[in-house]
Amino acid sequence: MTRSVPVELGERRYEVLIGPGLLETAGERLRPFVRRDRVAVVSDETVWGLHGARLTAALERGGLAVHPIVLPPGEPTKSFAGLETLCDALLALELDRGDLIVAFGGGVIGDLAGFAAAIYKRGADFVQIPTTLLAQVDSSVGGKTAIDTPRGKNLVGAFHQPRLVLADLDVLGTLSDREMRAGYAEVLKYGLLGDEHFFAWLEANGGAVLSRDPEALARAVERSVEMKAEIVIADEREAGRRALLNLGHTFGHALEAETGYGEALLHGEAVALGSAMAFRYSAAEGLCPAADAERAVAAVAAAGLPARLSDLSARTFAADDLLRHMAQDKKAEGGRLTFILARRAGEAFVARDLDAGRMRAFLVSEGAV
Image (cartoon, rainbow, N blue to C red; front, top):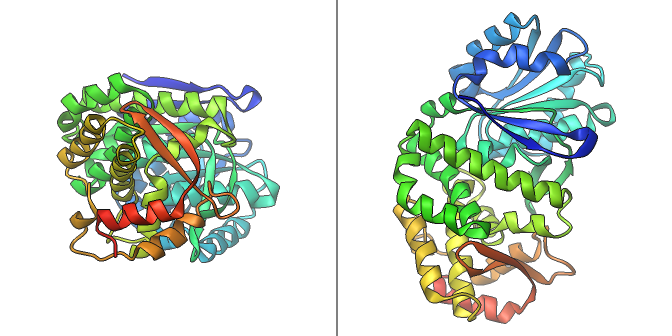
């Protein structure tokens, strides 16, 4: 069964299709968006090795010539160097602005290919075919594209909506358990920031989602995408409510920066730990009941995700270094700290101009030095 979640943005409206077997129908589904019978498919070596032949066959069945651009896997590809490599490859193919770029991979490929599409000849259409749980429920939807810099994550980018998103649940079968847990962190985030009933369902059914039970997985992805779409429709360019989607991210991005944006700490793991810290900080400041913070932390831990700094292999973090990264966060204004905090499980809010001294004391209480 294919589920459809519309992202209603007027003339830029698109659908997120969710279900098994969507890769096999990619050719017919992409045809309406193609002006010439060719597509550039941006992927990484891992995804292309696992699924490239299937996607190529499906696109060719739809009468499309496939031009793959296969990049190294991992966060370092989402950089100025990776962007230059990709743009040069697109130019070498002599793509027109009317040609279609397909992002076929996880969040790194989706963000990079989407940003390249946004700037290629001042804007080209693209389609997202996300291959990780994290990308299916979060980064492939909403049009936020970016690359990382040595000064922080996602600091250079553009808003550029896709024409279509195909979230094939079958491709998640090749994900490692660690990658599934990392994606599940973003699913948990949705319940924690805005839907207590969904969060309670995840408390009861998270194990089924992580074990890839078809019905549980489909429901988790669909509800996550519904919530993302609702928020994007209301606040496409993050002037207000969309910032709530960054629950856990200010803490998480700082931790990612300190660990080098690599395998030591995956993005989803950082979001999970950051969400737990946001709830504990909220409780410590009297903004959120302690019981709700305990529920959030327990849900993170039950999924096998890091819930405390001490879970990160005895790694030591300096509070001042973490604060420096937080001050560079996209939500920060004039160097003032901005965080997404919680009033309860299922209700987050934007907290601006937090006191750096109190935040530093909290980080120390969490185990930073």
